[in-house]
Image (cartoon, rainbow, N blue to C red; front, side, top):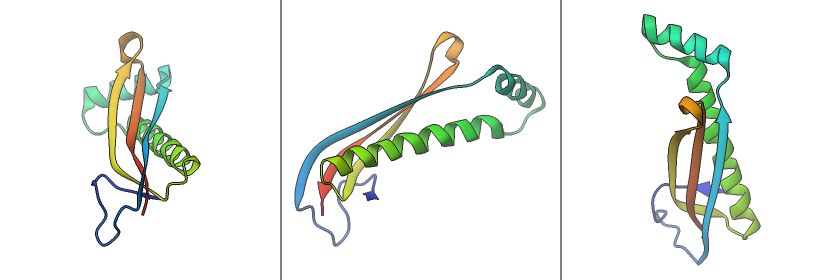
Length: 105
């Protein structure tokens, strides 16, 4: 399955538009991660713990997006957009929304 943020693929014309597909992932950050992230904020630098959580949420949303496209018979999803939001009390959870147009190329 090809995923692209563009609305077309070079030298691969869209044969059929199958519809919009979306996928959502919500992942929580636990207390231990919060403690280490707080220390990282205090001392400076990147938070590898949160970066891994973010990567996991993004990968899960894109996998689900491809699965939904596959169910429609798509071999590509174009115009892929990723949105990131924090939700829950004190922003304790991360939500990733992936969307795009399922197509046959």
